Length: 87
Ligand SMILES: [Zn+2]
Image (cartoon, rainbow, N blue to C red; front, side, top):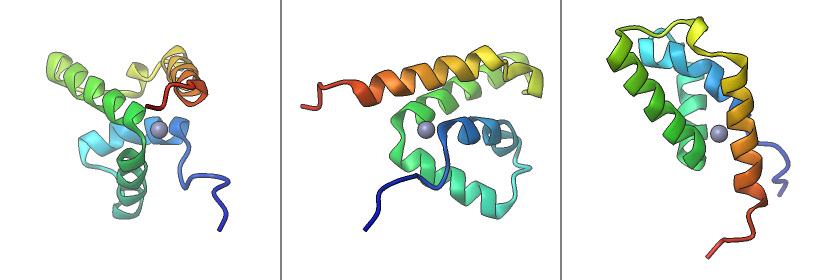
């Protein structure tokens, strides 16, 4: 059994989140995203941050998904995976 690549990369997951929160995601993509979220605490917390942003601003637009935000997420993800602290 191969554990090479997840169905959805974190970066893809983040890109789907705005549509997900707006309810405009296709059923298929929504399932892929929810599957990713189930196994990725980082994206789960990021999604929660997006919810708070939407609650504050009233909407989420592609402008909210700045490239540096994605880079931050990827960096956090790498740190998370590299952490030897798995107790
Ligand atoms: Zn993720």
